[in-house]
Each structure stands twice: as structure tokens, then as C-alpha cells.
Image 1 (cartoon, rainbow, N blue to C red):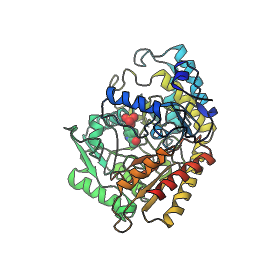
Image 2: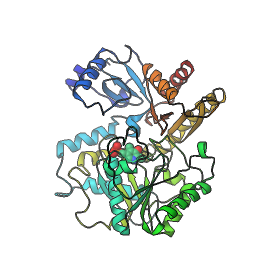
Image 3: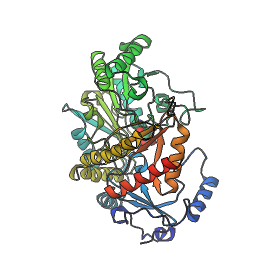
Image 4: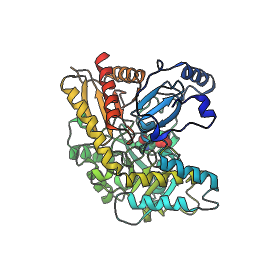
Length: 454
Ligand SMILES: *Cc1c(COP(=O)(O)O)cnc(C)c1O
């Protein structure tokens, strides 16, 4: 089957798992049709909107993305941890088609519909903890984070919010303030929202601290600089995503949660990237043995349709007055239909277990490589959220140029990988869980060859 821009326009493109599961390079990357699109992009789209892989995507599914030149690239990024169930998953496609033909929008705040409530029920059931829970739906991860902060402030009557080094929470004004890294997320875009404080993280590869030590350091900073009775919420990603897939030392997160409980502070786990089977559990919080008061979700929730949520303790969620939460598109019915189908896939296909298998393959490969290549400073992650941190072999200084060169070389050979990290020296692996072992291994071979060649 050949996928082209013309067949896409004619409505005959079928993506999903039936696409041939192969890496296929028909042209150099980018091919002529992709170059044509990128030239139009340069003319029409603001330069602030970047891209990683220079292609014109026309279909995707299983573990591949097919471009307009009929190249088939192995996808190790899932559109940044979004298409975890697989792109154009048949159940998602079917649910979306059914919903779009019935109605596209009524606004849940005007005329409610069942799928929104069903998504809330599913989130209340699936998120950690057996306490009474409620949810509210939004469209983007940043919007979910903003609303979690609103709810925590209303509930506590306090203003201060504590975020962490290497944290990433979005690109809106408040979430820029919460985000640690200036370039490219914040530089020149201030002033930022007030009453946001930054605490030190646990970063075992670089700080050498135990979880208890790192937590004591963070708590001491909070108590000295803000005061526990002034803090509305502590917000943290269980594993920092954009910040470099930093897995905190054991005990760090439980100690923070305990301090929050003792001080009447709302603990918010931002699971926008870690949520929905990605880490080998439905939510990463489970793997650290914590029960957050509020949890934000988005990326994996609706298989690519824009949907986000805040879920948490009913008494906290209900602090916001009627009409205080919402949005015109928040909980859009097409996105809710997609989410219900995706959640069904996570559960019936046991995707948390598949994430653990995928992660084991990636970890095994790079741990073996690390033994003979001192440029690989650290191999870390949980489940199918894995990363490799590149360093100068003698000084351990971050080597961002190496990470960028490896990613570029891999993409040129037909494997899409993403970089991340405060220092830009991390390559992250977030494959769709619909990828087969053989294709995954081929993708990792290409990344290994790219590393050997640069
Ligand atoms: C991506 C991300 C966000 C922002 O989500 P958007 O949908 O891009 O607004 C927030 N928090 C985390 C942890 C993320 O990874």
C-alpha cells in the first residue's frame, strides 16, 4: 500500500495497526514532498513552533509513521507520550467516527452528555487511592495544571505553590512560572505568575543523595523560605518528563507527601506524561507508593484527541464554586469518546504489562552499550518511559551536542527519537505500546549505530 498526499486528500488513507510494520526509506529524509511542506511551513507558520522530525506525516499506526514520500519511520516518541495505545487504534477510530456523526459539541456547561461523566467515573476508579474522588475535564495538560492550582488555592485559602528543579508543567503563563527551564519555554515571555517557589529535586545521578536526604533538603527550603502554613500546593511530576526523565531516589516522594499531609498542603502529582500505562503501572504514583491529593492527566488519556483532567479527593475538588471550573471545549464529546475507547484498550490489552516489557528491552540494550561507552552516563526510567543521559566521559558534564547529533542521525535513518533534559543531553524513548519487539529492536539498533557513528 502506498500512502500519498493525494490518497490522503481522497480520503483513502488508512493508518492504524494494518500499516506494514517496517522501516522503509524510499528517499533521503526529508524527501521532496516533505521538503515542500517544510518550505510552506517556514512561510506560513511562526518560527516559534518547532519540529523534531523533518517529515510530512500522512499515516501512522502500530510502531510506524509514514510520510508523504512513502518513507516509513519507526516511532519511538508517540507524539510525546500521547499515542500510547497506538496511533489510529481501531477502537478509538470507531468511537470517534460514531461520536462525530452524532454530535460534535454542545458544551458540557450548556448541555451535558454521558461520555464526559463516564470519563470522570473511569478516572475516579483508576487513579490511586480508594477515597471518594471527583474529576473535572479540560483540553490540555497546561489547563489541567492551572485548574489543579486554582482548586488547591480555593480549598486551602493559601497562595504559595511549590514546584521543583527540572519541572515542566506547560506553556501558559502560570505553567511557565511553574516550569524550571528558561530556554525555550520562558525566555522573554515574562512577567510570570507570582507566588511560585522552586525547591530542589532528587536527581540521583547528579546529587548522590538518598530520597530522605533530598526530601529533607527540599522541605527545609520550603519551611525557611515560604513557611508550611503559607503553601497551598506542592506540584511535582513523579518522573520529570521534559526535565530529563529523572527518577527520584526511593523515599523522596513519600516524604514530600507526608510533609504535605502534616501541613495541610495539597499534593498534586502532575502525571500528564507519566500517566496511562506509560511507566508500567496505570499511574507512576503507584510505583512510588504514594496517593496524591490531586492528579493531573492529559497526554495518554485520549489517544491524541485533546483532553485533560484533574482528579482528586472529592472534598478538595468540590472547593471550587459552581461555575468556577470549565471551558468552552473542556471535555469535548469527541475527545471523551476517544478517551473511553483508549481506557478500554489500556485495560483489556493489559498495556501496563506491555509497557514493562518494552521498557525492559530498552533498558537491557542501553545498559549493555553503557558498559563499553563512557559517553552514556545514565540509563534510567520506568516502563516504556526510558532515557539515556549523555555526558563527557571524564568530567560527567552534560553533552547536549552528542544527544542532538544522535537524534538527528537516527531520524535520518528512519527512527524518530526525542531529546529532553534541562541540559538538553538526554534522549528519551516513549514508543507506542502497539510496537512489536522486532521493530522496537530495529529502532534501537539504528540509535546504537547512530551513537557509534557520531
Ligand atoms: C506535556 C506536559 C504538560 C503540558 O501539557 P500540554 O497538553 O502540552 O499543555 C504538563 N505537564 C507535564 C508533566 C507534561 O509532560
